Image (cartoon, rainbow, N blue to C red; front, top):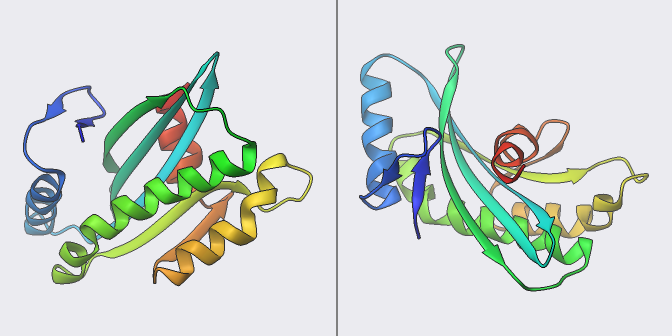
Length: 157
């Protein structure tokens, strides 16, 4: 799995190693960190582009993110696409949660799903929330889900 920085620079070490170096570096500078993970997707012709982000927030001092993108020709309904986004976020969260526990860094999983029933993505809200919460993660949906609805969204548009 290839991860990049927002600048486009490819990360050559495993993402777990990169996140640990960032946690150590940022906490040594005195920052209190929180990690937010989210995925967004965009259908572009015959392909669906997925972007998953790991956002490290420095309390009151901005943040930075790591990005993984992949494209698939698989056709899917809006609900299926929303749940695949959630699955990708959960897989990423699961891969780094032990490290975050070790350094006492809070973790949230953000779903690009609208809480307003007027929006199509709302069809997947209950399943997404149940999936994330059942894995033991803190769940955020729109409008609080900035990792998916703003950060990952920027990568697929």
